Image (cartoon, rainbow, N blue to C red; front, top):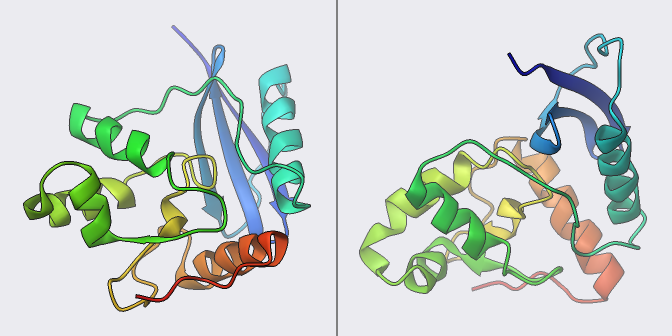
Length: 162
């Protein structure tokens, strides 16, 4: 049986829980409080934390980690599309559905976006409402706003409003 390891890291946007399974990062999520770390922290968790720190200092715009999130075929399709949104830019849920090839899948795309298990690494925070509003984020809207503001400061771009 494969064992999962959990690491916790305090970032400028709050506590992050990092789940590593074998040779893959399986999940990164915001949590309210640090839980007890496992007795063993795999090297991959340390690499993930280093890359997250680089993101938070503005030195990293794209992650280079072996990831293995759990999801459906459609969710993977959505997450792959999310990964194409450039650092410091946003798109609407409607635009995401269009990029997926069918604007009628907007609700399904939004649901898949919400199920993203790799916060920050797969940049689901870059998807906003058509009117420019922040809608939904598993880590909370304050964190979503923080992440968008952080990227805007690093790039010198203001958040695109629709």
